[in-house]
Image (cartoon, rainbow, N blue to C red; front, side, top):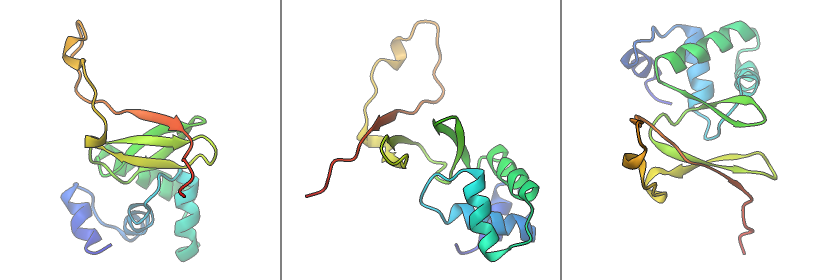
Length: 133
C-alpha cells in the first residue's frame, strides 16, 4: 500500500513503525481477518511484534474508523478493511466472508419502522457458493 503514513494521519493516527506494520498487514488483505490472523501475517515480516501491540493497534484503527469490526461467524470478531458501505455473504461451508456491493441489495421499508430512526444497516447473507461451471 502506497503512502500509509499519509493515510494514517488522515484518520488522526500517528504513524509509528508498529502501526505502519499493522496497517500494512490488515489493509493489504482482501479478506476479513481475525486479530490472530493479522498477528500471524505481521509476524512473518516482523517476528518480534507483540500480540498486545497488534490488538491495541487494531482497536485504535476501529476507534478511528479506519477499520470496522464484524461479528459474522462463530462469535469471532473479524476486522473489515473495507470501511465503506457494503453487505456481506458468509459461506457456511468454508467460513469465508465476502463483500457484497451496496447497490446489489435493496432494502425497503426502513422509513416505516415505527419509532426507529435508522442511521446505518447492513445485510448479512449466509449460504454456499454455487459451483462455477
